[in-house]
Length: 447
Image (cartoon, rainbow, N blue to C red; front, top):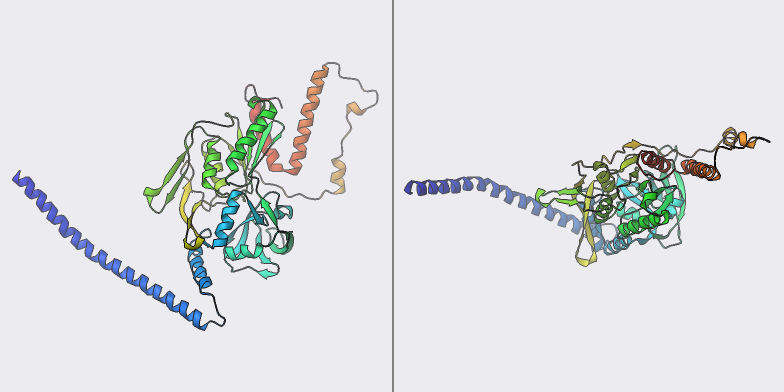
């Protein structure tokens, strides 16, 4: 027992000595680091006072401090920023689903303002603004070098007022001007409709209304079809969806999964990472799902696409998504302002980060640009004559009236799909996939 106590005491003494030896340099480094920080703060104070005293024009102290804070945050990444009280309120309004503006989600790329996506049924959408466009001027004034918030401020204005933006687009030789009229942007988070026997859920944003809209819209389409058994599958259209609330992305993913991880977030401290898992219940009752994405699908859209893809719950079709794999936390500040700070990255269930890489579709399908038809093409697209058009042709006496009616209905559906292909090739492709999957499923609805 005596030996044991001595051994313990010796260990304790050695531990104290070792700690003292290591702590000395660490404490010195910490003191040096603090001194360096104080020197930098003193430098900031000197510059601040010189600007106030010697700048060519008088500057508001509050504006200087806000600009300094915003510069500190925007130097971190394109998504961290300072929100003035007005900007913070605007963000809260936008999250609720209604705000004033042009209807575009933008980001900053190497000093340029880049369109992430236009929002459906907004002035920007109607004017033909596309994901990937660069905005260089607002009303003839260059916005190159401005912070993203400053550039956005220039694009805001009274509802009904006119604005001219200059756009640079890949494939276009010269910049061009687009005239828009500012409007109140009312976001309908989810629009549901049925094409043939496929339900199309167009999700435009992830705000407070997204999951409730999706659930109600899907249920309505199922009821109108006479039951889930009459639906061959679902197209979840996330194209040009710039994202939004992480909580809503989790709910939408959970809507079609019974179990398993949806997304995980990992920040600077590994212990603070979070995992979000699906709960029992699939709104689609196991029906096939095709997810549509493109370069305008970002953030929350990529969480949903990645989760359903990793669980083999959906086939992802379209083009590579935007690649925003970071999570921003909005932190209230004194004076009703707020700080938007990137606090973590998110990872799909398989552990992949989408940051800067995006979600790669299972099937790459480009959306062709519409080209004007030539006279020869128009002539070739006219309806050709068939045997039934010939005078005195024989009737088909091998089919009943009901069978003939069914053939005509199927033909009408095929023609409707062909028309949709001209209007929206990617969506038509997704619906064709569901038709193919349905053909191999027992008791699938008739096509």
